[in-house]
Length: 185
Image 1 (cartoon, rainbow, N blue to C red):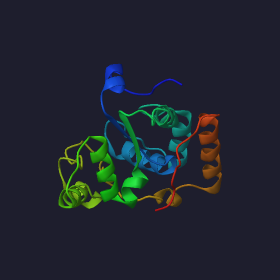
Image 2: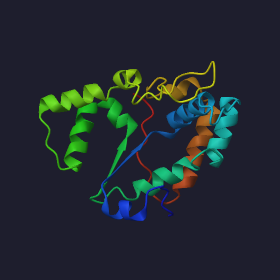
Image 3: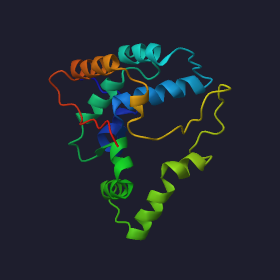
Image 4: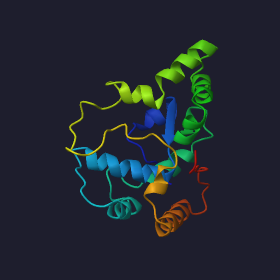
């Protein structure tokens, strides 16, 4: 399987890499809104039209499942930590500890609490350094930090679209193990 990364090979081989993935349904919804609000893309179609593009890999950065599967295959390496957005959403302090351990750090309980508070969706949405407030936006579209919720896909996907995406995931994964995608909070 071809590695899907913009990183130099030496970084992947020798550096410490933290790869964060999100369940594909919520990713498609988030990417749809991002491409609508960002003037770089200015997508004006419907979610159904965007989902067709997403499933074909005809969106910026290409085939999402190829990226996820290429990094998932490296999860056993000591220099690669693969985390899910849902894991962070479910228990951010535990994820902070896991990341710290991966980086060879041992933060105190107070430090973990401070990092988790600083990295909460609400704090990041209010922080100009993380909320992309200076990004040129399409008038009338939402913000970069939109909802941050697991399961928002339910407001967009029809049962047929869920079926198509599940088939797409199975087809892309083939005989390879796919990550455990969590679709509910």
